[in-house]
Length: 225
Ligand code: TIU
Image 1: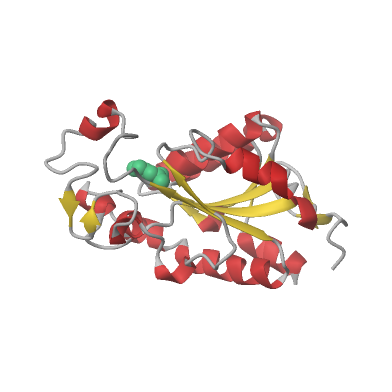
Image 2: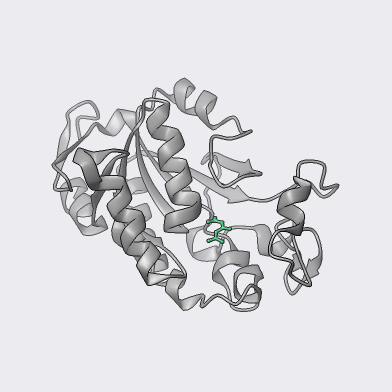
């Protein structure tokens, strides 16, 4: 494959010209605490099956992406064990009996180094794939993601992961303002709420692609094949 030759991906609101050498797959927060039964997400009253639908499409896309030799990065939402980077307002939000930093079923909730904070085994990063630990919803806030992408010469992002309207949307907006072109495969992102899944995607592609493009992973895979 010519890594500098654009590949045309069917997308909305119009086709996306993917340049392999400049395009990274950025997988957002596919962490055990959000996706596995008994984790923080379920503890908040959410139905994790809504998120688990995105696992297999991400596995398929990741396999083809790696085989093509394209760049992969992963993010994890979480905090330092000493909680020094956890805003007090985030700690108390929701008034739950257990919040970030407390001991949950998979270790301390959303704390780096704990089992629940780590990425699900199905999508586990390979050595050499950068993992960005982020304290906020967006992957650019208080992280070295922008510097890493610039060093790699990346200007386009295929953004997948969870949740569509929270960390994925925030990251796409942050990326768009920094000059990146973002393509979101809708089967590879998921929300606990079906209406937010739909609206989260519409918000990205409306107004001529105000924040980016929306496609399906099968459309990316068929072109990379
Ligand atoms: N990764 C991410 O989206 N974090 C969240 O807290 N999402 C919710 O939808 N709660």
